[in-house]
Length: 516
Image (tube, rainbow, N blue to C red; front, side, top):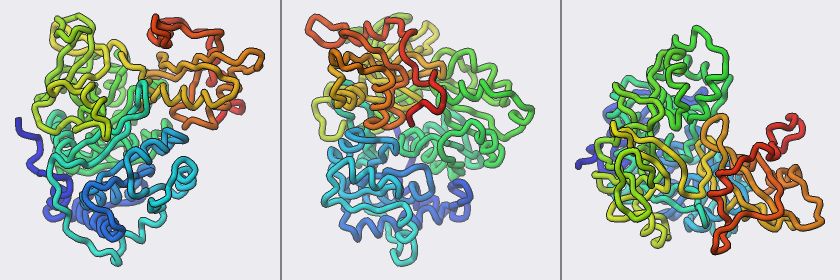
C-alpha cells in the first residue's frame, strides 16, 4: 500500500509549504504567529547552526523543551540537517533523564533555561554542547543563513521517542520520516480535514501524538496549528474560542475533568466540531457531544505504531470501543500460544502496517527487545483486548507492567529503582490502579526495614526528591511482604487484582501538606 503522503521526507514537505503556502499561518502559540515561509526559514537557520556545530546526518540531538514555537524551529531544523531529534519529557529527573541522554549517544542538548541545570545534575554532559531556549532567537537571525535541507529519505530516522520500560530501562522508539508523513496524512484523511481546519493541541510536543497527529496532519494540508501550553481546565474554553479550533486532541482524563465543570451556553458556540481522544469514558460520549456540539472520536495507538492504529469511523462511532483498523493497518487478537482467537475472546493485541516504515523501525541499540516486539511485521502491543462480533475492538487490560497516567507511559522499573535508594525501603512494587479521571494512578507497595518507623507520608515525600511529578505515586501501602510467583518474582498481576481502598492517598491531604 502506498503511504498517505506523496512527500519522501518532512523537510521536503516543509519546503513545499514554504513555496506554495508562504503567507499562510502555520502555527500560533500564545502571542506568536508563524507563517509557513517563516517556519521553514527559521528551521533552516537552526540547521545552519547545527551543521556549523559539527552535527551530521544521523547524529542525535536532545530537546528538553516545553511547547513553544522555538521547539518547532529546533525540531524541524534537526530534521532538515538529517539529524535525529530526541525529545524528552520535561518533568524527567534522575535516571529517567540520564538514561536517554546517554543511551541515545546525543551530541548536544537544547533545553529550556530552567532545565539546563537539571540536565547537568542528571548526566555526564562532558563533550555535549548545551543551548538554552533563550539563545535560540540568536540562532534564527540572519547571521545563520538559510540553507537547503540535507538529503533525507523516507526510511531514515527522524526521532527517537523514549517510552516506558516494563522490566528494564526505557526503550528508544525509532520513528522514520515516513512514519511522520504517513500519520499526518492518514489522520487528516480519516477525519475528513482540509486546509481551512484549525488543529488545536495542548498535549506536549515531546510526545509523538502532538507531533504526528496535530502538527504533521496540519502541515500535510497547509492548515493551521493552534498550539498551547500545558492543559488548563480554566483556560481551555478560552483557547478554543480564541483560536477558532475545529479539531482538538485530548486525553481521556482531560475529558473527565471537563465533564465536571459547569456547562455554559458558549461551550457549543465555538468552531470546534471534532474531539479526538483516548481512552474516552463510555458514559461521557453523549454528554460531551451535546455540550460542545461536536463528535467525539476514540482510537487506539502507541508510539511504536506511529500513534494511531485503530479509530472509530466518523459516521459509526461506538462508545466503549476504540474502533476499527485503519485502512493501512491489520489487527488481531492472539492467545498465549500465538494462535489468533475468535471474536469475544480476550488476548494480546497484535498490529501490522501495510505501509513500510509507518511503524517504528526498531528500539534504538536494542536488537533483543526489537526482535521480541516484532514478529514478521506484527507488533506485539502488550495490551489485552478483544474483538467484538461487529469487528470493533475493546481494551481490556495491560499485559505489561507499564503504568499509563494522564497520557504518559510510566516505567514501574524506574519508579521502583528510584524508591529503593531510600535506606529504609527494602522492597517496592509499583503498579497502576484505576483513576477516577480514566487511565491509571501510581500505587507503590513498600516493604520497610524492620524497626525503621518509615510511614507512607515519608515514602511520598522521598518520591518528590527522586521522581518527576508525572511518575510520583499517588497511593502508598506498607506491607510486611509482597506476593511472589513460584520463581520468586513479584506477582504484580495479583497486586492489581486486589482492593487498595485503604491505601494512603496523597490527594486526600490538604493542599498545604502535599509535596510538589
